[in-house]
Image (cartoon, rainbow, N blue to C red; front, top):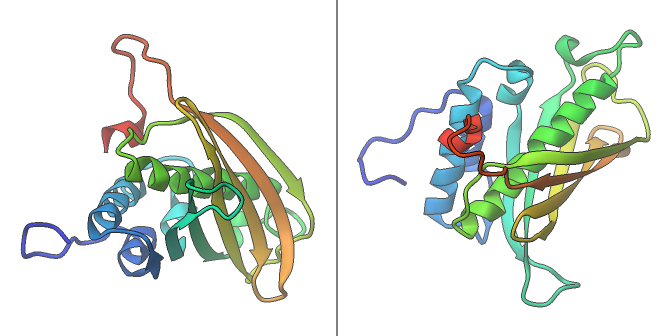
Length: 195
């Protein structure tokens, strides 16, 4: 993977599974780049870091879009189990936690296609729209399926479907629109931009 003989040591389940997830259209260099992004984010103490550290990547792909000839889409699938830290008062996954998962997982999926095209990974959210369909109860495995929709010079978007994997039930759908941050002349770069 890297030019050194030593294998990278992951700091989380998230970054460890980036190294082993089944792929389609992903070069070893792109996998290593995504490892560095996820491992770096996993090591930062920030909101939701316990949840993101426990995510597992189960698929990472770059695919030809069926409806738009000549265009690529990134697809990433994540899994996690709903634990106590994710619950609302009815013992199901809190809507805010669902929104966090949609935000984070779609952002990483957008980072994958940005990296493929050698573009900076930094992005800022414009909109995050979520429709909640059913609860994900404590202890169930959720599957978070993300696909990029569009990628322009500054604006990009992805869609996410969150499933209760044990009951084959759609929990939530989301659309996330992001943009490249404005150059503010030496402002604070995002944490993702430092990686």
